[in-house]
Length: 392
Image (cartoon, rainbow, N blue to C red; front, top):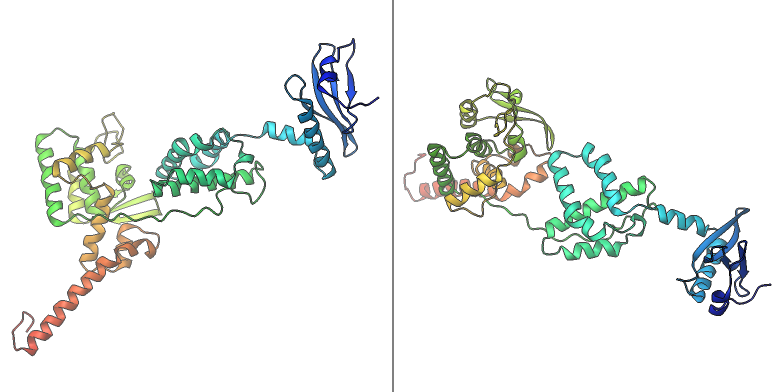
């Protein structure tokens, strides 16, 4: 006979030779299971899709009877709404964490679908920001508030913060595809990115002269690897991205045609036209037998892998501590703009996928036009005043 389960009844229920149940009078099919070993467990029994099911609510020595009854009531509601609470709990138990999602994401997506530089950025965001904040959470339980809080904590580094939540977005898009999360529930949605200020730093002629002097001094001292100084010069003379120069192989170099034929740059296949200074650098680099790399490293058959320490020594010696390696590419573009080249041509030189990427140099090309307008108007003014000019 059912009776309202109380703490006294639960404590006083003695084990018998066989398993038996005490049923509650307030919530139908909610009861206490007593095993011969003395173990007592609150349970809720029900039928779902015509199958007998049992939900184990929790051990009686841990879960108070009042809480167990409330949990049983919640289970009743789920059954009425067409959800199997036992199956739901099992799915939750098996649900993977964000750490496990990140591992699968790396193996199936990052490794096979991203370029090396992008892979490094993704892994940096995952290791240093995403996993410390979300790693232990179940993928199904991560909310927009969780991602928003991560973004807020990174507000002092807005660019990195924006990149990080885009990695989160990609991870959870794939989680939906893989059936690990309900469709259209990506927790990154609705979170606004921080405004980013593009940092533009162009070296002046005087600063370039100082860099050139330092490189010549280093070469004369023979204290640095020749491939490192060659790398910096190639970056300055070609406007190439760092990875394009660091991974340059001799089979990509066509000295006769004066080009680099890169099979896989950031924007796909790319042909880099080489000026005389760049060709001279390539001709001066010693080719090592059995080494395919233009810029060899210290290990036999290997390449130069990290230019940053060398560049930091160069810029410190030149008194230009704020200049990044990528600013050499900006400088190449600024000189191209100052020479009067169109944005389309500058984009071709830099290997931009679209002219929109090149528009950051628009103000430089406009400056060239202004100088030309000043020259023309000065010539006309000189003619009006009867002052001879060089074109008369």
